[in-house]
Amino acid sequence: MQAGGMGGDENSLEHLEFLLQNLNGYSNVKIVQIAKAVLQGSRGDCNGPHFQMYLKALDTACGVGDVRRCLALFYVANEMLQSTRNDRAWNAALASTLSTYLPRVCAIAASNKVEWNVPMNILRLPGVWRKDGVFA
Image (tube, rainbow, N blue to C red; front, side, top):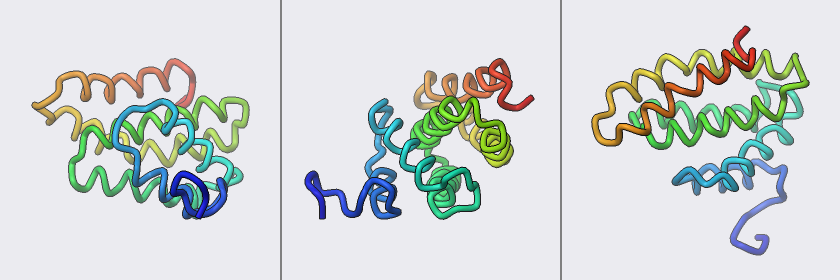
């Protein structure tokens, strides 16, 4: 085990699992770390285990209707999309995969009555992605 309680090296699935389990807010540092771990571990493969682990976390958050976690994981997606802006193949694969989750996450966000700003932030991201040409 490495210093700080993280098992495995930065490109390991164990490290990514640790980061995903400890994503409990909107810390930009954690969001960037997770995006970096997914991208480096996936090496441009949306079917690879790192990206699949990220999708499992997103699927779980959607399944339980955890709007705050959905937003945090969509911020990770945003970071990945921004980081791969010049890699059209990866960006297209990533956008295609994420578009399957978009309706679920938006529905969860729209039904949230507790925190008005969380749904607004989730619903804002697709507009940013459209403007940036992610879903073009």
